Amino acid sequence: MTKDNFDNYLQKFNLNKKDLANLLSLPYGTVNNWNGISKPFPSWLNSWFYYYEKSLKFDKIKELLKDEI
Image (cartoon, rainbow, N blue to C red; front, side, top):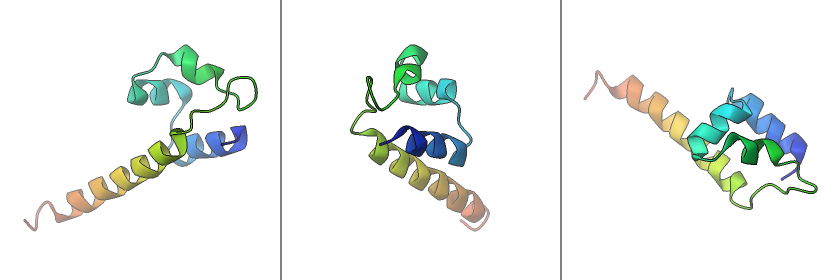
């Protein structure tokens, strides 16, 4: 993952680094230090964003169907 990819994900999901750190249960300093060069992004971060997006979509569907069930 590149810094641009990371920033795009944050923007796409309307998150900042502090919010992401809370969601990941990581110290803010850890997330803030990721830069893709001297402090690479974790290998699992792409899949985390993928499943986070799926979770948001599922929540929307669930909310739409709430009154139908």
